[in-house]
Amino acid sequence: MTRLGLLGVALCVWPAGPVPTDLIGTASASGKTIADAVIWLDAPGSGRVAPRTEAVLDQRDLQFFPHVLAVQVGTAVKFPNHDRVFHNVFSFHDRKKFDLGLYPVGVVRQVPFDRAGLSRVFCNIHPQMAAYVIVVDTPYFAVSDSAGNFRIKGVPIGTYPYHAWRPGGSILNAMVEVHPAARLDVRWP
Amino acid sequence: MRTAVAALLACAIAELPASAQSLITEVTFSAGRSTEDVNAGSTQIRLFGPVAKSDWRVYLEGTWGDTSSAASDAFGAAYPYDGRVRPMELYLERTAHRGGAILGVRAGRYRLPFGISARSDHAYTGFTRAPLVRYGTNWALSNTFLETGVEILAGSPAVQVAASVGIPQDEGAYRRPRGLDTVVRAQVFSGPLIVGASHVRTQPSEVGKFVHGRMTFSGVDARWMAAGVQLRGEWIFGRPFDGVWTRGGYLDGIVHVERMGPVTGVLRFERLDYFAGEHSDFYRRVTIGARIRTWRAFDVQLSLIRQPRGPEGSRPTAFDAGLTYTARF
Image (tube, rainbow over all chains, first blue to last red; front, top):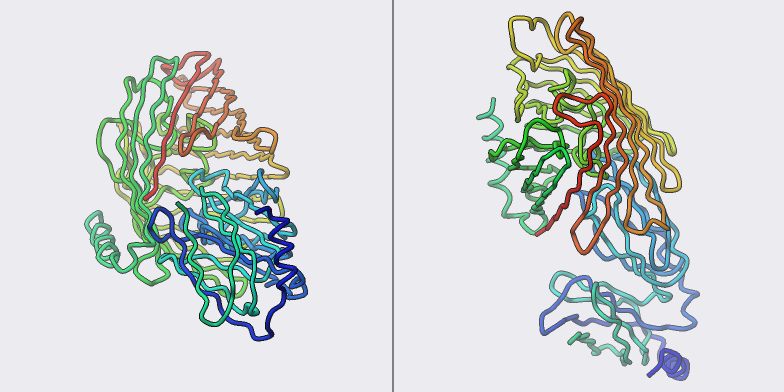
């Protein structure tokens, strides 16, 4: 089914109930649970829900933390340097392009992510540092933890198209029915 | 003192299992060839990250490197290449942020905190050789000078002062004798500009009947970066021992803009003047090169060096090519 088709289905079934619930589930690939999978629900009309205005992609111990950061469109992501060495954060490909320049310990620089999509983030001084920022146009999203579990909070009951992405993997698209006992298990082959 | 450092780190390691998932093990393999008839290879292993659930960080690094000729400084950017397994930096550190203030402490064995001194900063942006002012053989500050002691950092993101007190514990061919060292560094950060000043008072690395007094150097360094173009430079001056003096520095241009893709271009102009009567030396060197991020964790580094007046054993023109692979676990 095309994404346009999924959008049409979503428009037909939205909204189905006033009481929100949490959608829990597990992400797995090749039969093993995986961390850092991002799962989000299409929710047209929910743009009125204000995004969390700030998120943090920390630089500590010569790595970015978290490795995968999911945010809603309109979120400003802070990039603090907590290492005693300089970092030079940049993203030249994909959705958002920026180069924050050199900055020392204690300094925080910020980037607004105003379009949906994926950005790969690197440090030009430390080639081993890499992270992903995935920007979604919905307030209903989550990232799987180290056990592969995720929880999308406060979802109105109904049926939604959902999408799932993981580093190095394809995007999965399908439908999910959200109700208090619902569970979503996302599986990559 | 070496025993005390080992004990300190042993205590840190003993705490590691509680935070094992947060610790990073990094292994780097490098190989290179220069037209100065040098083949070189090295490997480093590093363990770093938080200690247990505290705010303390540990950094442990060991290295092995070897070269087919010690006459050239090719690939001697950050480690000794003498065919021996050696410990390098071994320290614990903590950096606290309160309001707009920063207070940090580092204890153990660390690179001499003078000027642009971080390994990743000065050595792996695309240059295959350290600056001329970073070799002990050039009567300057060696890039393998290591201090065992305590360093305190205080200030704010905009203004920082660091002071280190310790004893020399160098690796490589040039080793300073024991004695109390002091290093002070101040740094100011504003927008695209970072300016620093450093001073070190330590022991001379040369030995001989003609060597008296202390080694003292002062230096200024600056970095400016905008739109993917970085200009940086360092100028040092002082005496490696009484009766002689050294001055020198370098100016780097480092370019990494979007249309260059995985390539970072580098350009360096440098000079070093050693004033010692009939033994004086005056070196000049220009380097143009690149670092290319290739498949996965492989980096290629290429440098073309023109040195009409270079250190003994160098050729007027040289070309270095290096390949580095780094894996993290």
